[in-house]
Length: 109
Image (cartoon, rainbow, N blue to C red):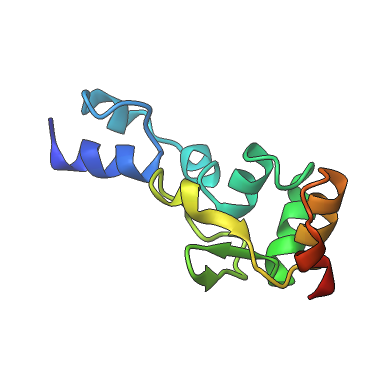
């Protein structure tokens, strides 16, 4: 198992870390699929790519503790679990209201 294959797997651009042969087949689209805007659509935060880009540029999305405003920000496999709405996001409030998960305390803030 090569170090390059492990890094590319962790980045999410190849499906398995067992083969260096996959590295030869890398394309630009492999990296585009790891952009924050694309990942937001995959994770169902947005219905369309344009909508995802708008959410990111307006500061509605954070990765871990950091708000990210660059739609091209690359998301690794490990980072996917830490993509969420910023606490003050009005979009987050609408989603929670829609899903009946907004409690009374959240509504007062």
